[in-house]
Length: 106
Picture 1 (cartoon, rainbow, N blue to C red):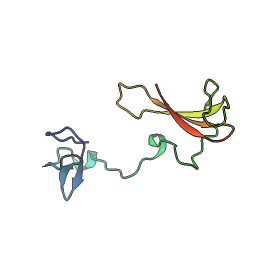
Picture 2: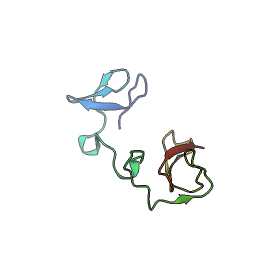
Picture 3: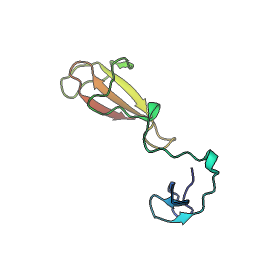
Picture 4: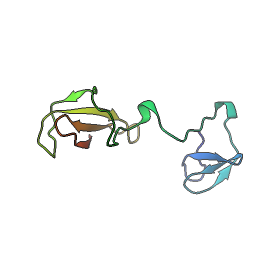
């Protein structure tokens, strides 16, 4: 990964040079091509399961929550780091009774 010297944002490779995703500044690539990985989609553990058809079943169960839709006190959940590393993770829930989804920030 390469970051912009001007604003600190992540840069991406375009036409052989690195371009800042925020301010548009360009620079020479400082990472060897063999060590440089570009991805266009998230996969596996990086995904946050918020889509309507995401499979929460089989995930850990929380019984210390209350569904805002139906009042049921049990939900499946998954935990993802959505902010900076020094911030607490976010828990994503799916009610075991009605399927309502919500998130909880610690």
